[in-house]
Structure formats: structure tokens, C-alpha cells
Image (cartoon, helix red, strand yellow):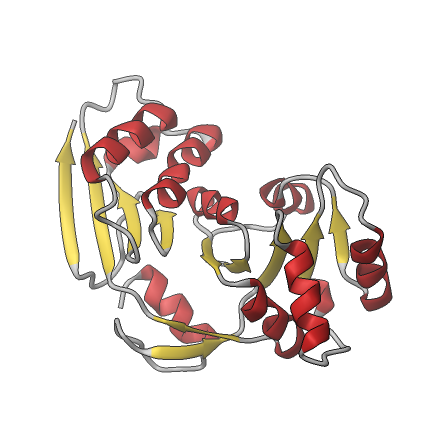
Length: 227
């Protein structure tokens, strides 16, 4: 198992997982943000749910809106309501993102993989179930490790690396878990890592994270890039 699979197995209370396994896991955090937030509430009510389990590890991000239904829902159930980016919340609260599993409904959360988090995007209906039961089902994807190496003194940026990878892989990574590593990534600051991690969202990867030290376990494919 690699760094992603080990963490997913732990949260599913399983000794191990392999690609193709269907598991039910309890994420560390539930993040509801974006235009589909209303769809989560609609699904929650339609399923007859009333109580949110573990609301302390749940929050709604409603940047730019003051929707009364969402505000009331959060206040009545003790859910945190924030008006800024989820990664900023973790940074502000001093919560280390490395290794935590985040489930959300907005593709934008995939950029949190730049800080070592494992973000997973699910449907609003699945999120409604997760709010009520704390768990959701998923199938373990195959993992591709992309190692990026090059001269250590070159001024690489996350934005240029993201563009380079998108041009190289196009849509060939859709549905896979992707781990980015290599000596080049050790030089990137937090903003560059975030800019690079947009690659996970734009490439269609199911899960993605930056792990400069490598996949720390078995993967299905290894691709080495020399810049």
C-alpha cells in the first residue's frame, strides 16, 4: 500500500486495501462549499435526516453569500460556518493538513493536496449521507506516481509545473489517484505547491497529493520526468 491507501485503510478500519476494493470510511473532515451546497441540504431533508454526526469536524464555506437556510442549518446543528477558503481555515487553526482525509463536493478542494492532505470529492447526495452517518463509500483507485527531477537551482514555479504536466498528460489520468514527488518539489513554497496542485483538479485525477519523499509504498505505475 502507498501513502494514500494506508490512510484510507486506517479510516475504513481495514488491515489493507487494494485498487478495486469498495470500502466505507469515515473522513477526518467534511467540507461543504461551492454552488452545490444547496443540493446537500435538499438531499439531507429528502432522506429524512435530522441530526448531523460529529458536527465539530464539519464546516460550510459560504464565501460571498449569506444564505439564510445554510446559516440556520449550521447554527441549529453546531456546524462551523466560514467565509474563506478551507485551506486558510486549517492554517488559521493550526491544523496540520498532512495525511488528513477531507471529503467535499467542490472540485476546488483538490488543491489541498498540495499540503499533503488527501481530498476526495463526492456527490451532494453522498455528502448528505456522510453528514448523517459520518461515513461514505468509495472504490480504491489505481495510483500513479509521477516523479519530477531536474536541476535544484532552477527557479521552478507551481504554475509553470502545473502547465507542463497538463500539456504532458492531458486527460490520461482521469479516475486515478496521483502522487507527485521528486527533488524539484522540495524547492516549492506553500503558494507554489497550491498552484501546482490545481493539476489534480484540471487533470481529472480522483485523488491527488504532493509527497516530495515519494509514494511510500506500492503503486500501479511510476512515471519519471526529467526537466
